[in-house]
Image (cartoon, rainbow, N blue to C red; front, side, top):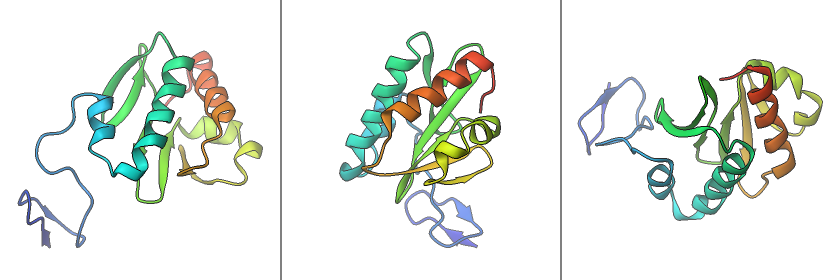
Length: 135
């Protein structure tokens, strides 16, 4: 077991990534807590999703920025080397060909920092909204 020296929480894995203290209440607060070199891409991701899903409510769910409209539409999150984009497993299947250059797994698209394809993110977000397939 590993114990975080900041918050005292115990984890199986040494240096387990987690939030110490109070979780962010807004997406802006979430982004501002990330490393400075990642913030511009995270704000861009937020801007894309705000413009594409103007009726969706911004929330923090599962400690991640979430877009919600009668249900969770999708999430995104900062990782060490990429933005985790979570539109759900059906979206990953639907956009398989367009995602060939990305690392993907069930419901997850890993977007390297500095390489956000605005058009593709919009397309996936709209597909999730209109089909009801969601994270």
